[in-house]
Image 1 (cartoon, helix red, strand yellow):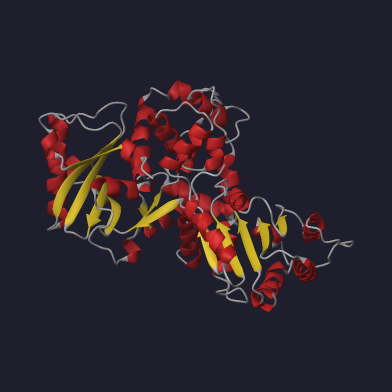
Image 2: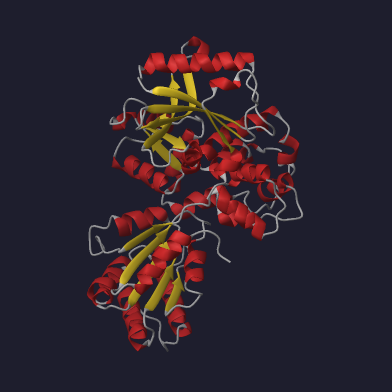
Length: 475
């Protein structure tokens, strides 16, 4: 059973019903469900289906192609000697098919493009000279190596330039979709549990599929991330190496960004990583952004200054790995259970909850009743040694086109959050300081985003609006 993905399935079905041949690319991070989406949409039935193999030479890749042709019903007695010949055999298979629309699904496409293989020119020739000239071919390709997809297909300056008719980016699940997945797996999880699991794993369906219904959330996290043979203990390097060539440079970027919650400017990143300021850095940042590992936002009051843009690491699994997994030096297989009620875990939870709120900004806006208002969302920081010495840190600003700014404070707690006298004074000072520094003339609305709401005491009247965790679970 497929959960969510209604929009993506509709796009695939529209491509199938098109009067003309279609070239569709499905892309997204590892484990996000690209293959499952395509197979479920077409009920596991294709005119031809093939999957590339990782780190495998061209000769063996071609042998596997021949086997896929045979499984599709085309008798192929000899292995093709090159990719031009391989695609020629695929043409013969398609021509022999009586199906209304010939659905060709090539999974892990980037792995077929081995060194000096000639794969890309053969793919170009197949599509441009033959398939696109027909009306009955639906070519669907996907792969986890996002940098290859972007550079060799989307940004191709040769025969594949502007040839893709549909790009489908498969995003991680939302909290709503993760709740549906948990229910389908008969996991007895409260929304508080689901929220914390999301703070650890993000919305990657495969990670969630590994949770066991007989274990507590803490027990599941210990088994998956900290046990000697935990399924996700070594996922970090595998994840980045599967997505990017020369992954070490991408890892150096995310490690640097992991050191600063509010993010870094390009110049700060260069200082932290030693990478050169050139087109390669621009490309790497764009690819990390396309994969939703990082987000880019502009500094308040400087929307057009690209050099001032801030890059922020927002991938939940990556941040959990950098914060906890890599520091489990004692190989404590019950690390999370033993850390659960420590100040270290509470500090992490507060920051992780902020990220989840950014990842669900659509639901936040819906809860505030401003879904149709144009907005720009960002964190805000002002250098200084703490807020009492001139510094300023704001969790989230929603800068609205209707002359209002929501200054959002995010609080993760197991019960209703109470604004006391000292915190009330801190909030007043924060709002006053922000108005003074930015000289904004927009109205400032204090918005509390919490797990269980805000206690309605004497200080609650300062709050203009509230958003609770339940509202983040909206579709």
